[in-house]
Amino acid sequence: MRGSDDPPVNVLQGRPITPAVWDAWAREGRLTHEIGEMEMDFLVGHTSTGRIAVDAGCGLGAFSRRLRGIGYHVVGIDHSLLSLQMARTEGHGPQLTYTLANLDDGMPPDIPVHGVDLVVARAVVPFLTDPLGWLRQVRDLWLAPGGYVYLVVPIGHERPMQPGQMSPEEIIKLCSGWQVIRWDAPGLARLVLRPAGDEQGCLCP
Image (cartoon, rainbow, N blue to C red; front, side):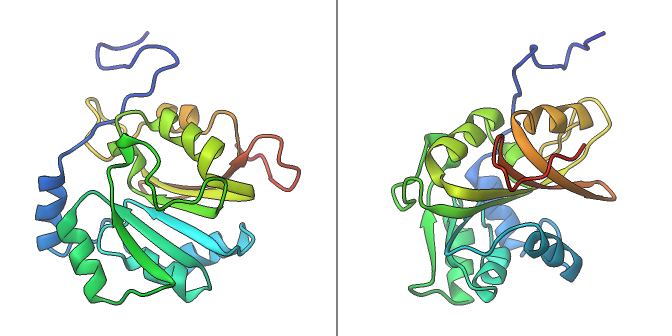
């Protein structure tokens, strides 16, 4: 039986927070989830290194810098100006740029249409107003042929869900229509997605 906090069938509602909250987290120097070598090995092992990556909701830029370090030209996107200012203090240039944009507002102008080999969203998708709609946009407009999406999604089991979390059922719904390689850590789902029908992808439960 569906509870009163459940979204309608075939609808996945996000839990947005304001840029002011992100700014406050930036002042604290908060890194949402530590980046370990096992995570990087998982990402590299299940994607083909391309040329262009987008770090959607890049925050302080830690993962953007990791992507640059493995050879990508990286665009980091965030709607917290303070986060981007702090990210730039750690380095930027022609191969690592940052842009201010709200992912809920559509495709940022700095993103090449059908030109992104890897889109990363670590602990970001639950904060979007329409997570499924954003992923469709990424699939239909952002990704180059053979491109990947890499998501890190905190798993919540209590009702109501906390901001930044998704229930196990919501994560399954999020992956509908994608080929999925999944590796979970305590409280986290890590997902490599490819559009359904991509012959090189691997469908995993």
